Length: 405
Image (cartoon, rainbow, N blue to C red; front, side, top):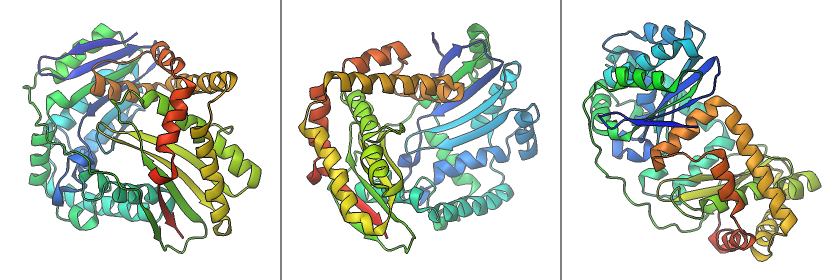
């Protein structure tokens, strides 16, 4: 199903040929906001913006027009631990996508004039984010959970730090961090896999191997907290959460299933049925799980009526306690597994999602599980595993709470 290849310089390649007229190609780099220190906060995200502003071979307009001009899309994103630059286009244009991505990553010049303009763009992005409490609350929660550690700070950075970025600092950060041993090229589309490998060799294979320095610090000891911020919003925004298994933790699959049962995207999740559908206390209620390389967090978010706060917390804790105090029945567990497998299959039907998922997986594990292998792992989860995880991680003493009111 997947074709794997490693270039001589250490860049890894994973390809899935699906016969589509459209191909999605991305370069995943194992660098994110947790790799920043001090006044570099926000640097990885700012570089993600600024690589489109000029290279040794192209000006900004030529970069944007190279893919947009053939009806494709060029984009990028940054997380706590990864950066991804990707193109989506007709499969016949894959070569120009790979040529452009390589140019952006290895030949960006960061023209000072363009950098100054981009600072204003990023600062406005930060301000826009601050005006969205349902998004901002996640970052504030992480800042409290990982206080004093690079994982705590916002991916976008702070305006005062962004204002002090310059071309030389961006180049220095890239030279030190964007090493070939941290890179994965992920491609899903209609091109023949052997031809894709040749194109990757052509556009990425000629660069010298560079190796990273393993300098990510261990996250601090987690201490549950309760914190309230006065924001004078119409709704009360509430985030409840705590520690969860890391990417490499053997319990990750079981917790992913547990999280989906509790507050996943389906309308029949326990929280949606017990709180929204039964009482109408909120419009949005969801549970999310973010596994990182050496830790993880889960979050339950809701925007609620202020008068319903106490009753909401009571109902929320009851649902979590029930999962930790009673075994799921055979039919109930089977239904939950079937639902989760179906959701994953549908998600992977979107080829862009699959390209990103397999790129991240190959970056972390040097291989990618097929849907059949993932289903096998899910089927292996037992009711007692789910109950034990819920008992430990959903215990009231283990939970933190952040409230905007």
